[in-house]
Length: 395
Image (cartoon, helix red, strand yellow):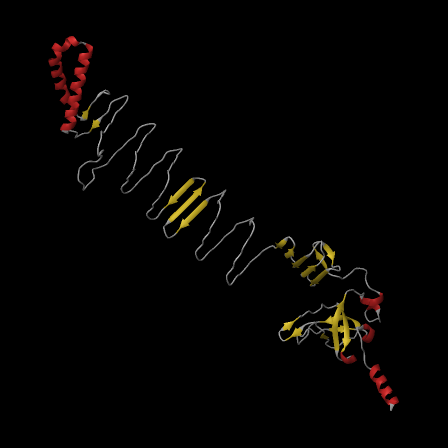
C-alpha cells in the first residue's frame, strides 16, 4: 500500500515542473488581448516556444488593473500552473541580455551575461536607477521617476521628446515644447506670492463673456510698438503708433474732471465742430496768443433773435477792446450804425480839443474854424468805401 503511494508520487513529481525558469519573449500578439506571451525556456524546452503564458499581474479585475506587456526578446521568469508544462505563466522579468548563440543552452544566461546593465536610466541627471529611486520606463523612452533620496527628492514624468513635469521641494517645473489645456468646466487660480509670465512670441487672449480686472496697486503698461483699442458698442477706437494718436468716437462724448485740467501742445492745435461750439466757465476765461487772434463768422445766427454774426455781451461792467500799439478797427461794408458814427465823432472832437489846449493855449481863437474843418472830414472818413471808424491809440 505504502509502496504504491510512493510510486504514484514519484511518477507525478517527475512529470511536473515547479519553480521559476529563465525565458525569453518570442511573441506578444495575443489574439485574446489578455497580456499573454509566448516564450522559450532553454533549460526545459530548448528553442521551442511555450504555449500562451498567462500574466501573473499584481492587480487585475473587470475593466481595471495593471496591463504591461514586455517586448520581444525581453527576459521573463516562467512558471507552470501546478507544474504542468501546458499551462505556462510569466510571473516577472529580469534585466540582462544574452547572446543569441546562447539561446537553447541550459543556464546560459546565468553564465554568459553582458557587462552593460539593462537597468533603465533617467536623464536629469543621466544615470541608472539606484536604491531610493523607483522608476517605470517604456522601451521608447517615456518614464516616471519617484526619487526618495533627500538630496534630490522629486517626482518626474518624462516623455521621449524631452517634455517633462517635475515636482520637487522648489515647486512645480514644466519643461515642454508645446502646451494646450482644455478645461470643460470652471477654473480658479490663486497665487499667494508674485506672478511672472514671459512669452517669447505672440500672445492672444479671447474672452466670450465679460472681463473684470481689479488691481489694488499701480498699473504700468509699456508698449514698444503700436497700441489699438476698440469698443464696438460705442464705435470707439484709439490707435497709438509711430505717427501719433488717432481717436474715433462714433457717438456722444462726455468728459468729467473733478480737479484742474492742463493740456500742453508742442505744435499746432485745431478743433473743428460741424455743429455748435461752446465754452462755459464759472470763472475767468483767458485767450492769449503769441501772434494774432482771429474770430470770424460766415453768417448770422438764422433763424435767431438778431442778425448778429459775432456778439460780445456783458451782464454788467465795461467791455474793453484796446491795442497798445497800432489802430483798433471795427467796421465793414455796411457799418452805418449811428452809435458807431457818433462814437467816432465824439472821440475825434475830444482828441482835437486836448491837442490844441496842450500845444498852444493862444490858439483858442482859431478853435471854432478848426473844429468845423475836422467835423466836415469825419463823416467822409466814417462813410468811406471800407466803412472804418478810425480811432487813435489814445482814444
